[in-house]
Length: 236
Image 1 (cartoon, rainbow, N blue to C red):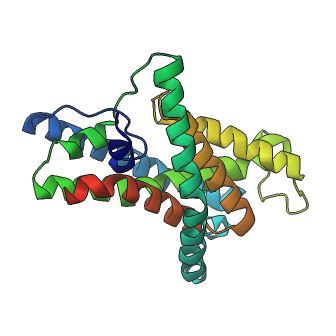
Image 2: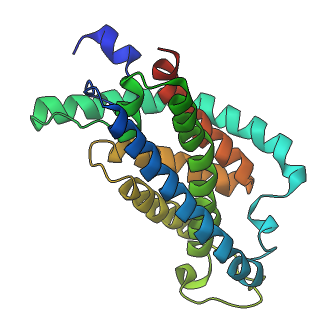
């Protein structure tokens, strides 16, 4: 692959995708919509548990309205810091896959669908799912719920209701929670090809959440990452 092609290719999409039929495009939109709906329903059912067991309830996860403006600014700043590092690391991992392991990385379904030049309504659907729905739901689950639970007593294996307000996790405990969450976050996306890049992204997201306690910052960083990866194909 040429250097020019590497610069213009979306970060987590190392191979040129094949053209999809209209039926395949609709199937991709439908499957991703159903996945987002399932996550949303699960999130709604989890609200009662969160409200009863986590410090400050749902708003205590970093979702207070007053945190929104600062969260946008912090998320944008974190994105400017981490994205260049992710590009370098992703190019290194891509080189290792091809040169060392003789493996051609696969293409994510969303990127493959966008590269097929779908109708504008489907482009909008892909964008809303990947750049809006996915960051909100995934940050709620992985940082808001999972990472928060893992930083609790015994890594969340002992749940106190109401929450134990006296427990303070050590720095090592916090980093272990970030690393475990990141391992699961990268695995949940189902592709070994982009696992290292997503793991590093998740470490940045986890650290951002630990430093700020502001889930809006995470959503902003995550949404900016997804948007910039899709932007060349959205504008093509």
